[in-house]
Amino acid sequence: MRIQRVKFYIRDTLIYCALGIALIIALFPIVWTLLTSFKTIGEYYTYPPIWIPRHPTLANYRYIIWTAGLSYLKNSLIIASFNTLLVLAISIPAAYGIARFKIGGSNLSFWILSQRMFPPIAVIIPLFLLFKWFRLIDTHIALIITYSTFNTAFAVWLLTGFFEEFPRDIEEAAMVDGCSRGSAIMRIVLPLTAPGIVVTAIFCFIFSWNEFMFALILTRETAKTVTVQLAGFASPTQILWGEMSALVIIAIVPILVMALSVQRYLVRGLTFGAVKG
Amino acid sequence: MRVKKLFMRYSYILPVIIILLGVTIFPLIYSLTLSFHSCDLRLGGSWIFNGLSNYGEALFKDTRFWDSLRNTFLIGIPAIMLEFLIGLGLALLLNRKIIGKKIITSLLILPVMMPPIVAGLIWRVLYHEKYGAINGFLRNLGINAQFTWLGDPNLARVAVILVDVWEWTPLMMMILLAGLQSISIEPYESAKIDGASPLQIFGYITLPLLRLPIMAAILIRLIDSIKLFDIIFVLTRGGPGGKTETISFYTYLVGFRYFRMGYAAALSYILLIITVILSMVFIRVMTRREAY
Image 1 (cartoon, each protein chain N blue to C red):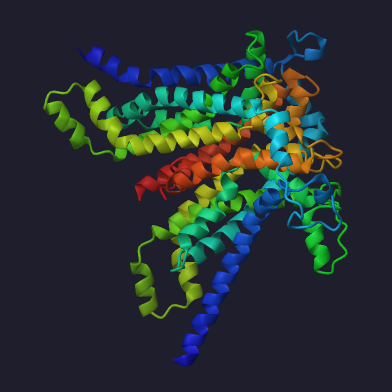
Image 2 (image 1 turned 90 degrees about the horizontal axis):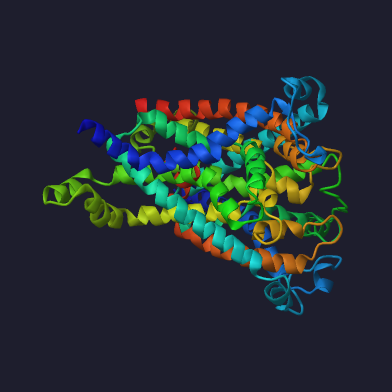
């Protein structure tokens, strides 16, 4: 019996060790970036590299806020917010229609799903030429529209799942009591499915915020997003690591907070609902 | 009356259909037409019909295209295999009674949600030959590490694979964990009563019941790996010597560095066909589940 218990202790210790190593590997790059963002140039270009900044400084953050400008963060915010609003405005009715009336059957749903799989490079070549034709290169509107290529399909897919889970009886009861379908949707369905809609909105926002290739090709300077600005730090010769790290931290903290708030739906969101999680 | 009702119903999906037609279907038709022309933006961008010669060039003459396709899979497949093995291991560990499970999971999934471009940048700093933390760490272990991770033709692909694994293993883990948690306890109990060993239980019960989540996860990652671009852009730009030039990156170069729009459109169509085939497999797998 005692041997059995010792065996359990050893097993548990091994499990926690393995998880501990996984945590260190997952978090180390992020922690290192956080530390680098407080280092001076002399400290991050030190041989051998040092862990903890000896003279922690906020100069990198000051540089980002005052010199490098917050305009790219602002562009990302504008584009991601308006794209999310646009996508929700068109996806909510569509998802409701698909969930309630089975419009188009499974073919339509799969067609919509397949939109999400397209390699972005296949869409960007024609879109680039079209936006060039309409003189919309380097405008917010070009990216707001372009991001709906992947977000609309995603939002319809996810929202359909949420609406299908919503018990039909409740809205039918409201309609028996004299609500029109429109007001049943506005007063009953939307308020009660709000958590699902918020989850969808957060995912759309994150996907827009994180996107890089479309932004690289469709913007120059005035509508440049933060991911393009970040990539600009990766020059072949010398990188301003401290300044870059500060911008990385500013750009990812809101995203990670949002991601943690939808953690429960992460699997469903990232697998297009294929795995419920 | 019936017509009106039908029209009402379709009006729900009309905006989405219009948007998707506008931003994907129309561009794809435009791009298909473009792929039968030569269109060089440096020469004014006029369209000159040249039939199938863009496709002919890609399939029969352009060795760089085939290399980039090879690179895509030489990076994608090892990365997905590692992601699967580590992800499955972590999922099995997290499927037990663990103290602080929620916090551990939350922290482990952080890499998945950050922009891929950021993952690339962070690792670029870590990989630095002299000032990077990885070589520094190896030196602390007593290894005289002077690895030029991103400049060495033999190491660059490994470096890209490691970043991909770092970023996407947690997703694999979450999918498999969700799958594990949906397995009911009964088959395990009866297997224990019959005296099955843990290895037998894993091989004969857990793995077969996990088949669908496993296939979903691998197919999703496979489709994603064809899109691999952001990490390459900041880490290696396809170098050294084209060893990490993926198909998406090469198509980007052809279109937006060499400005050969017609040829880029043809390349992107070949890419699209590969993706469509994989997606059809994915959808087939996912719909078969409903039969269970």
